[in-house]
Length: 94
Image (cartoon, rainbow, N blue to C red):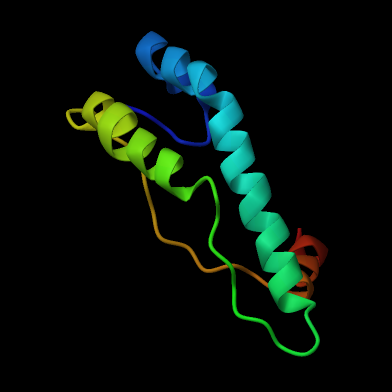
């Protein structure tokens, strides 16, 4: 079973592909963050711009990573993000 939060659970093949495409993955998420910050801090309001790495990243996901994962069991769960105050309250109760 693959646990997305535990890289030790990734197969050799998954690790190989993630390492091979690490620059693209990094660039996609860095650009996403940059664009979101630009969008949220714009004055006057500007629409969110498209990520120049989207097409390459989407192709990677659909044609490289997904075929490797399609027969894998992956541990997932749904969660709701806690506010900082909620986290603080939980820590105080420990």
